[in-house]
Image 1 (cartoon, rainbow, N blue to C red):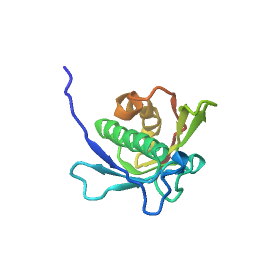
Image 2 (cartoon, rainbow, N blue to C red):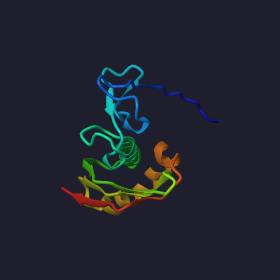
Image 3 (cartoon, rainbow, N blue to C red):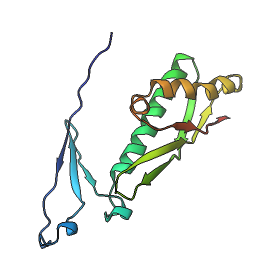
Length: 157
């Protein structure tokens, strides 16, 4: 049995004041994303290589952040199921996007690099192995069509 959940988001974009509408390529890539029941909107643009504002989030940033956040939450869940006390968790992930001559493109791989600190040295190997289970539970990873690898490190404090 499966349970369906619906998530909603809204995007708002308008021509900026003073922007030329004569050149169709001169449009602003900046826009605002609003998520239902969230107090703060996200100010988003295209990535800098695609004429965006590099001070704002871009869709590629948001995809990568969704992956690392979902993996972390799935990992903390499986650690709790296995009575592993996690003291800290960080990740410095990287994703490779390839753009074709046609302008289309896709992520080809994402490398998660979680560094987890746990309390019990006897659980170190189990804690390391649980990244695979976390990946199989991660909603976002299960929605991607590219490989997601894990170069995980487990420390004990």
